[in-house]
Structures are given as C-alpha cells and as structure tokens.
Length: 439
Image 1 (tube, rainbow, N blue to C red):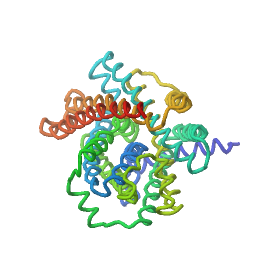
Image 2 (cartoon, rainbow, N blue to C red; image 1 turned 180 degrees about the vertical axis):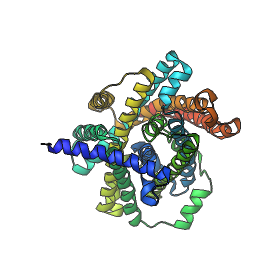
Image 3 (tube, helix red, strand yellow; image 1 turned 120 degrees about the vertical axis):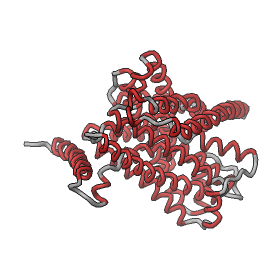
Image 4 (cartoon, one colour; image 1 turned 120 degrees about the horizontal axis):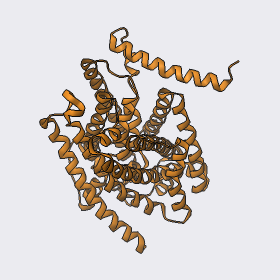
C-alpha cells in the first residue's frame, strides 16, 4: 500500500511529466490554446526572482523616497538589459542541451573554469547574504521576533522549498511563481493606498533625467546591481533540463517561445520594480532620507496605515525566501557544471547561509553587510556576462545558432557599460564603507 509521501511524490513527478507532454503536444500541433502555452512558462519566472530580490527593494526605496517618480526610466533600461542577457542564457540551454557553466568548462578549459567557479561561489555567498538577511528582516518585523530567529525560520523554510526539486521541476516552478505573484500583489495593494500621478509617472518612465549628482550615483546602483551573476548561469540550466528539440526548426520555435516568456516574466517584474519606486514615493518629499528597510516599515504605518506596512513586509519576506532558494539552486548547478561534482542541496544551503549568520551574530550592521555584498558582486558580475557572449558567438558549439557579429554589438556594449558602472559602484561602495566605519 502506498504511503501519503509516496503518493505525493508520484503525483508531483506526474505533474512534471504532464507538463513535458503538453509542451510536446503544442510543438507537434496536437494541442492549442493559452493553457497549452502556459506549459512552457517556468524558467524565466524562476530567473525573474533575481530582479525582485531584497537588493532591488533597497535601491528602489532610495529612488522613490529621494526622487519620487523621476528615476523610473532607470528601471526600464535595467529591465531591457536583463531581458537581453536572460534570453541569451536561455538560448544556450535550448540549443546545446548544456548550461553556461558546462559550456564554459568545455570552451575555456579546466583551469579557467575552476577560477570562474571560485568567483561564482564567492558571488553566491555575497548574493545569499543580501537575499537571506532581507527575507529575515521581513519576517522578524512581520512576526515581531529577533533578526537571528527570523534567519533561522527562513533557513528552515528555504530547505523545505529546495526539497521540492526532488519531485520534478514543475512543483518547484509553481511555488516560486506563487511567491513572485505574492510580491506583485503586495505592491498592487500599496499602490491602491497611495495617490499616483500617472501622467507624471509615465513621463518619468520614458524621459531620462538626473536631478543631481546623488541621483546619478543611485541610477548607477540601480542599473549596475540589476543583472545578477547566478541568474545568468541559472537560466541556461533551467532550459536545458526541459523538453529537448528534435530538429533545427523545433529549436528555433523553442527559442521564440523562450524569448516571449523572458519578455513577459521580466516585463512583469519590471512593473513590480516600478511599483516599488512609486510606493516609496509616499516618503517623498517629506522623508527623502529613508533608505533602510526597517525604517521604511516603521514609517509606512503612520503614512499609509498598517495594511501598507504589512504588504511591504510580506513582499520582502516572499522576495528574500524565493531569491535565496533560487540562488542555492543556481549554485548547485554552477558547481556541477564547472567541477562535475555537487553537494546535497541542504548542505549547500547551510554553507552559503553560514556567513550571514556569522556576520549578523557578530554584531555587524546589516546595512554595512549589504554594502559589502554589493561590492563583491560588482567584481564577479562581468565574468558570466563575458563568458555568455563569447560562447554565444562560438560556431563550434552552437553551429548555425551562433550569434553574428552584428547581433553581438548591442549585448557587448551593455557588458562594457555595466562593467564600467560596477567599477564605479565598487569605488562608491568602498567610500560608503569608510563612511559607515566613522559613524
């Protein structure tokens, strides 16, 4: 007789198998309609979590509180760049059946691959610091418990979510999709509680402008910290593990479907980021100095009421939990691709979140820890971006699906600009650390 656990595991596996069958039916013309197309949704949804993580909360909070809707155009540009690189990453997995880490090892050789893996692991720890602590801050304020206790609960929840991967890809995708939807819904609630000048907001989204030098620094932070290293690696791994194309024509169709999903998923997260900025505009112009998550929560209650404050914390918790889980999944895939070895997911989860516990338990200010994590990510980010472009143009690996020189100029320009912006972020971050040390 089957136990309840065995039944759940079998039904979860069947869900993934049914999703694969639905995708095959759509490609073969045996199935039509919106529900059929939804079977392809998943990889971009999971990757989009990186664009609504607690780091985005902080930069969008600063932008809205300090400048209202005048920096919305930065969110638009950042999302266009994100769409470009996530689409290229997904394309690699579809065309080759391998992920960016595996292809980097094949293309650049083991020594460089090991160096890239070490950089990716450093980035994973830095990423998890911001995401894990951000989610814990949301839970601690929402539940009225200590930060370390919140971190412990988020740790347990994240390990439980990672266990879903053993039951197939679809249950995990659905849960992450629910968390992303919860973030969006929370900001819909907040927008319903504030007065938005929509014509002015549209102008702010479409017409670039920098009111002062501080706005320039913030715009650099919003763009430079948007594209996350683990998201670039991860997307190729998510598409590689799904339905494999049987011929070139089918491959091209899957790429078109993937591109559409990227535009839709990242377009929606872009709207969420814009909603974050608009919601933070409630602090403008009377409280432009607010830049701390806890301070923002405490200020929201007298400004907009308890519902807005609760919605903010709910979104922050969902953001931190989903992004730290996805980051752990990316780290597992990257290690396997670069080294051919992997840890159990719960072991990796413990390893990547241990530094966050040590840092917070030692009394280090959470703001200072977030600044350090962004400096580290600024060093790591160009590595996967450059590797992605080099491999995307390699005809020995991609054949006729390799990008032409004409198609490469736009992403190459984006890499150059973002690398420059991240260098500026490093200099600014070091200055921020020096300032924090004097306080």
